[in-house]
Length: 282
Image (cartoon, rainbow, N blue to C red; front, side, top):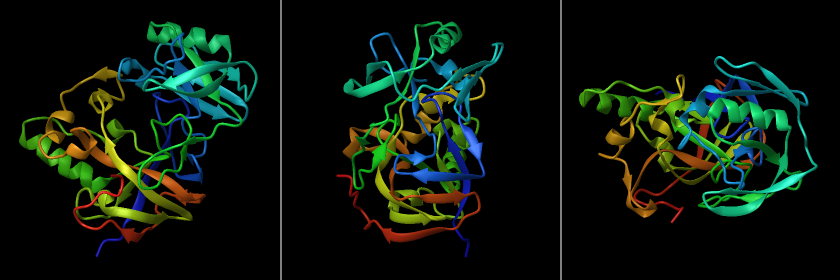
């Protein structure tokens, strides 16, 4: 019998930008250390994402101590000192004004504006940032859509790609779904849907809700170009979620119940399963 393990870990310093794969990570109440603590916003404070600006996928942000280093194709690197507090502005996600962000260096704003072709400003969570999620386990999150973790499994991707190939399409990589933690060793696709509580290394994780997918998985994360209709077209044939407004799902959103360290290769232990045919998020 195969043993479920952590196959991959990644965090995203700036919401919507390229992810950073790591072999180990400290996991706190809001997820992997430094995950989605920065965000790009429009002049009115509305967040920017790959939904409208797929080219964001090609831009990278790396944390080096108290410095944020920005890089991208055909662009000069830029290093700015991180501002943990100071001037602030109101910010919103999905039409909800939930708090403020700390304004960063104007040089970063100019760098992003030139790269993306639209006015963009970089903000960071405030020191007192305290934003709850929702679902079976609410938890906390930084600038994530609404939860601390996105969890997927290799078997789910293999099952999806088999269906895509049957329809004459091309298989897609896991990075289209921008997960924080990927599980290997579960023989059945979408086993993550059925796990209420599990441990990964020293971290205890609680299911929050199904991961309803927007247009971002249709974006090629290497080129920053939309290359749909896959995987949305195929997911729509077997992963519609009436309880979530009819959206298609892949992976699950989760909360951190107990922080700690997690490493690639750590065993995944399921502590509690969700009863068949139920979804505790509803």
